[in-house]
Image (cartoon, rainbow, N blue to C red; front, side, top):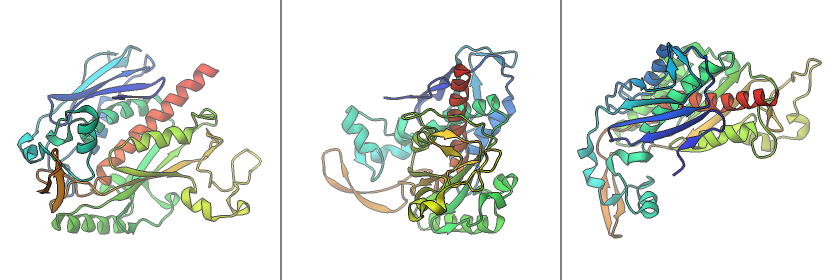
Length: 352
């Protein structure tokens, strides 16, 4: 299995949803970075379950314990080892799927590929793994503090936040449980998620991420384009079905005379349909992209499926699950974006 992301700044993660702990090893972190551990825990708290009545009620403190690579509050340049204990597993909630494949889950593919699977909470396929990414991303943010990364929920189902990101106050994103920086739209989203949960159903949505103060020159030509690496990272998140940056799919409807970003004398551009990236390299303008998440696959409704012997059976989801994953995925999107940007920032230093 591929358990490592990054080239210079690398995270290799381990652990299962219902195992003793999850964790990882970070290599390539520069020495001498003074870490703010409260900020790292804050990011974990944004992702953790049980934080509101519209997400899974699994209760986890998600307190990270660092095992190596840090001395007197500073990184040493050595591998940073860390772990997060699992505290609130209810493995019996998954006994009903021991021999049954849940629709649109990884149960079938993992079982066929490896011949054996950890059915408790999905094992390694669980979004619990993303807590490891948030730890690495929180450290990455502290390596590049000048770059500002803000993600927010921009849609839930057919409810869209229509305002452009320039009109939003990102300080309001975490002031509501759905993490939408528009209070009126946020209330509508929250109600839609609650109504969906009452029906035993789930719903998808999108997250928009805006990255400011990015220097010119991050990204490598041909197969390591900045937007390609961002897409790779985002498409690695559980439940993600799509990625677009800049004008995205809307750009396909436009003429070149409309779409070209004309230059100002200082090298900035009058518009930014390129999304801050040209030729796979950052151009100094804001980078913005959108990530689409499918509805959570586990429903509290009865659905037909098959068991490992190919028999058609009926099953109903049990246990604690999100009705909509996007509110908790906001810090995950930010974390992975930070890891990609740190990787390219370190690579630029090797070029200079």
